[in-house]
Length: 245
Image 1 (cartoon, helix red, strand yellow):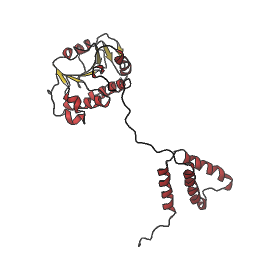
Image 2 (cartoon, rainbow, N blue to C red):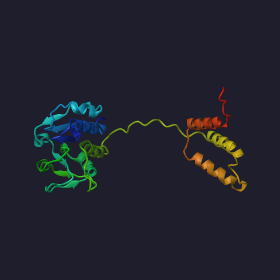
Image 3 (cartoon, helix red, strand yellow):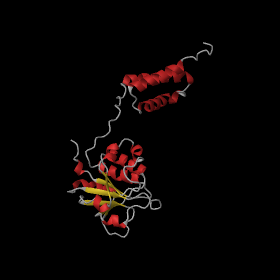
Image 4 (cartoon, rainbow, N blue to C red):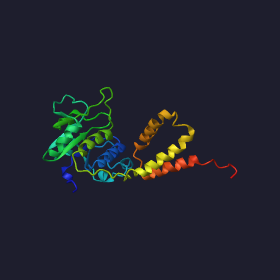
């Protein structure tokens, strides 16, 4: 069953500077099932022609993005506002990691919003003051520089862990080859190695064969892979073709 849209947190980009970064943030959102973006006074106006190519197909997010003059207007209908910032900027509020916030948000009544600041400076104190909680990721204190899309994807990923998202379909894997096919591969290789003296000295032959079998058994080859390896060995067994043929 599809998740009700009003249960999704709203992603609010406050005074974003570059259309490309808005597009990349939209792409990050849609990857993890978030579709509601709100923009506060984007520097270059909206819509922005640079956003679409950077969104790489996340057009639904951009098309439905709403623009507000102020951060307060953008979160007016939200009961729970989170501000992402590396520093608390002198504002005393509860601080959570993205993981902690993502656990709490789905349990809260009413709409939630997550604020992300402009690329160059981050959220201003006035923006952070609107939030009830600050989200700060554990980050290298000597290099606390996430770009806008990275910050969005970090939070969106944590949120996705607590939502009913389908795991992307994986390529169907073939089962391991039957034992007789694997035995045929091992026997084929042993037959080629025998005249080369690989199993000498005789006193170590049995242990060497066991080790070789262990190496060839470990990968869990499927029947196509075993067939390919047999083809390789058969090719190596053949005498080289005459260059004049």
